[in-house]
Image 1 (tube, rainbow, N blue to C red):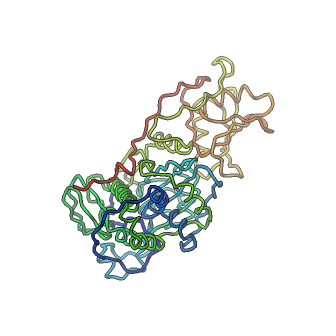
Image 2: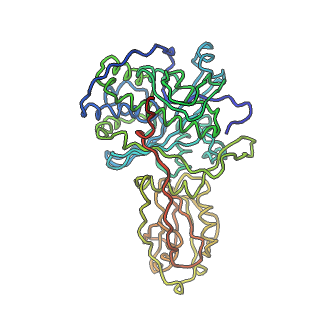
Image 3: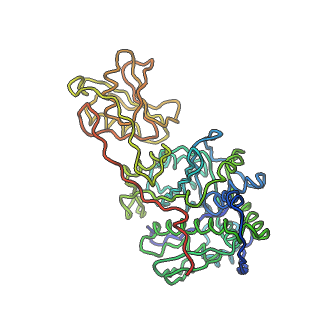
Length: 480
């Protein structure tokens, strides 16, 4: 969804690398077999590099050489599921005019985020789920109102970007990686280029890219143009597909015998990656790298956010996209529950209920508090409870603590039966006897969906839709 006259930004897979662009030709490859153990150890380097997870792998090798940036993340436990926010920053200020012209970047100063990915590591660190967030997503930026999600970086840098993603997805971000455009070019060139395939021809004067349909071997500058062009039918959505394809190709090339068994190429790859990324100042990345040594390309799965409107006209006149909120909420709730998106959803445990004739909702008064940083979540929950039939007087309040993941229903002494009726209206909410008067709903980042039925029994659950996903191995183009 491109606005008229909008200057297209670069794909952001690279870091604070502001040196010269390398355009060295590819050297002939010679096939060498590599040990399985070495492939596993360098997988993390292939990961958090170039767009997804190579920061971790590089930290494993030389942890003190990577730049840091404070995004205010919630540091994860020593072991467990984690969410990483990868942000690609289009920084042009330090480019010469010749570089800007050659890369077709335009001359606009400042920084923008054109690539955002949430990377979920499973609790056992054996599965990786990568969700691309469309940069044109129309959402609420905390403290700034409604805007495209990529404007959060301009408004408040890494911290506000992290908060905006948390508010939109309901996930808690544990690590932050920031990359920049020149580093992407250098990393691709250090690996000798990447193989990509396009089902339709691409001719984009803005990026200088002209490719016929088919399979192509691209060097750094061409790969950048391929990843950032929007000159195809689905615009930014097609670009997300291409970025995921390029990332998979880079992972495959980084793990090839040609790279692992070639000291010069491996050193070039690691050194170029070191200069491309900034991460949150947390020493835990070193331990994370060693824990992920057994991850393979088949364990990396890409997913896209379900959309309801790909041609939304915002009040500001901008073209944007709207998420399919129920489907997106379900997908991120499954990620938060550490479920494999390629498998059918796991049904939650039945919520306690009472007989329909026992206590009518109209006789129950409920107080609502927002336990998150998600603006308007308390009000939406109140509206749902009122529609169900409960009494919810006054405006929803806010809790002091803002990191509630699960919605909790507090109830006082003698209120258990009434609390069960409320729980039947909020599938998945937890019941908790507490020192409160009446019943209090603390809304968590799981963003509960209030049942529409006014029956006091829990409505029968419908099977969830399994999101369409693709592994990194499936994304790799085969040479023709």
